Length: 154
Image 1 (tube, rainbow, N blue to C red):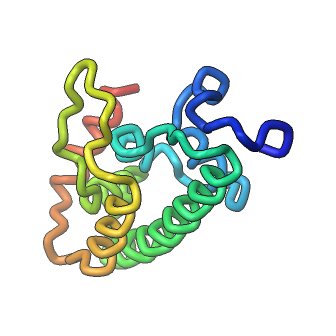
Image 2 (image 1 turned 30 degrees about the horizontal axis):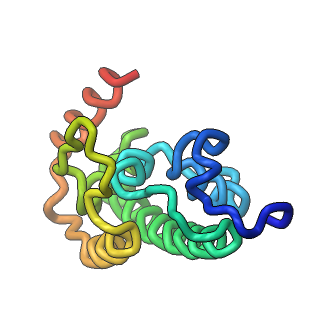
């Protein structure tokens, strides 16, 4: 960003590979133990390279990273409360993130490069969903379904 401040983020797309990796990388700079794998499916649907100059794009992404960390604090709180109720699964975090993901049912069409929803709006809706997460609606059978899906994707 310092060497070529006038170039757009999108002009570096080949080097950066994927927009969501930039956002996740900024989160990992602050928290090496961040569970980014749970958030990756959502980010792939909403995170895109911008045509804004790289320094401005980086500041914007830093804001997204802060919001993602704040969402993760809420997710950890929910997971702890589920564990206190006796639910034990390595997939609890994945389950909770999937439940609060506003674009989880959006299918990406071949050749469509538009985001399912603007990333800022997605993060706002995720935080709102996390804050009103209803523990009573969690079914242990749902966790088995998430575990089966996760094992099938590996």
